[in-house]
Length: 434
Ligand code: UGA
Image (tube, rainbow, N blue to C red; front, top):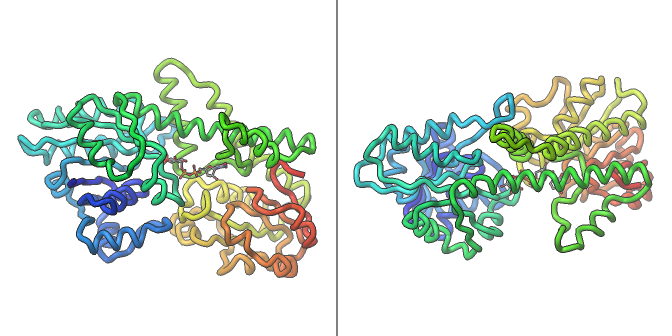
């Protein structure tokens, strides 16, 4: 099929590449000329395992191309996906400016007799589909279209496998013609398809992300009880996770959830429910627990080091999770900001996140970045693990201990084995485990 994806960010670019990989012909549209130029040169603006090969292969096979022209994309495609950002506003509600602008732009280029399925892939509040359709019809009275909601569930860091082998495809549609076309788009993926109305599909995305955040906050609250009682949160998570009704996934205690989705989507779901007159109080507690988790961790650091001023602290990890270069809303960066504010000298290293952290000016002045994980530990009085990259688990810890001034580890993601670390001679503090 001929498809167009408007917006070449994490969701748009990876979806475009995967649609091309299964045989569709895809045009990715982006209004950022710099990004389009990069893609034309074969450079990928984001780091995502497997993405570069996928893009290069499908460009070479002429199934994938890039443009800044919405008209070219809409002319070429039966199905037009919208995958532009939906950032949060100051009050937590979703800023739909980009979606509205794209809807007007589509209206401006849709020609009479050109039936199109316009698909919302961005995470949007319930009832947005209705507004997108009304907007396109308002600016183009002859438009022939259906608007479908098709939320995306990929995770950064494993976006390609998530897209190629999804747990489910959700298609929110009120038109059989549009549903049939969407089923053809997804047929090659051999995944279960759930067809719903548009509002339900939109709600599914916010409800899913909020539920996963709730799972993380639940185990983080349990980790506090473990610390107070001497129990081990990893064993508790294994024990409850073996119940198939609960499942072990997303029960990893740590510094809390971050990134460009969970914090924003929980806030958005709170704002949406408030607006609908049915406040979702439970989600406010999910947020409180998440914020408290970093606070409790910092308290442990202060208890061990007493005063942070002038202390040399090494932080491993800047990204909000491993296998990505994304540093947006990263708890690792929040942590560094707290440490620097209290006067510590921070040295940090991340396998992929350092250039974006610098480019977006996210690090406070004075933070020193190094070329390797080991180099960052030199002379440190404490090592804090903030993001669980495999590279950190694979370090030679006898060298790390030698490099450090005092062998003290705070493992914010329970990556290391406490017993092994103690055998190396470190004083070890994890989250919710003795
Ligand atoms: C999340 C969802 O998992 C995806 O299904 C969804 O498509 C995406 O948001 C989105 O809305 O676009 P993502 O934010 O990329 O994906 O990454 P996750 O793997 O979900 O991690 C989010 C945060 O939760 C990270 O900071 C991670 O460290 C934290 N986390 C995750 C935990 O603290 N504990 C866990 O057990 C799992």
